[in-house]
Length: 240
Image 1 (cartoon, rainbow, N blue to C red):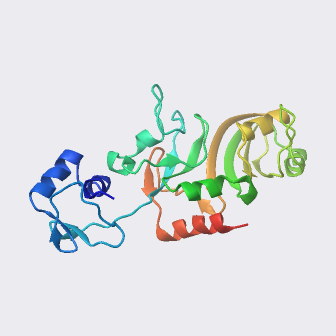
Image 2: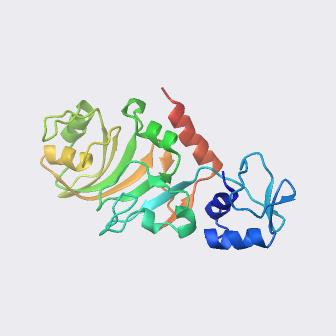
């Protein structure tokens, strides 16, 4: 990797600003000064410093975002605000992307990373990773619905979903529920309830497996994952 790209990715400034750092003699590789931005270095094994401070190279970034309604799950869009737009410019440098998608009006847990291998594995239907949602439903959700969801729901296009776990919190004219699905079909939760003549009026993803939305995060806020969380997601990736 070129030294100027590494320093720019690590937040030491724009390419122009990094060029100035190099010109000043502030950058060293294994205690040898570097002034040429095109110099190739090994970011993992080389000892890179700027003004004597070691540059810690992290090839991957992992963020938990509390997605708000009104924002689309995409990396860029000419008209709509995206989940990537919610990140600080420094956190956008490694070109992270959302893992999976939440509808524009759906809130909740979203993983944002640039780890393509992990993202692919987490989204693989073979993994059967449960995604748990809280929802408010227009209509009285019954034990019959619980059984229907467990057996699999026939959607409007004829597709029968995999077994889903439906838990009733409040059963009334407006019900409250938790539902856990292991697929990611288009508008799946909304279509499943439409199939039993009910309407989802609010939807929020709470968890992926046993990885839960941090209740300290306000809508639109995000944070880096800690090592325990990263290890857990990698463990999910390794499941067969």
